Length: 64
Image (cartoon, rainbow, N blue to C red; front, side, top):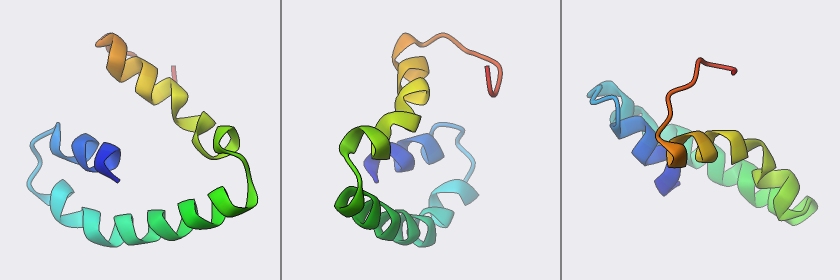
């Protein structure tokens, strides 16, 4: 959840952090179910491009 909160805060949009509690609740339900049913790689694999882009500090076009 901390990862998603940081992403919500970065743009400095005051609405983004306020929208996080309901989204976080939904994400926690999804992660609990996903991690119970599937492996970590399946659960977190789709986040890899986002985390790599953030770590590289290189802007990329959305979806690219």
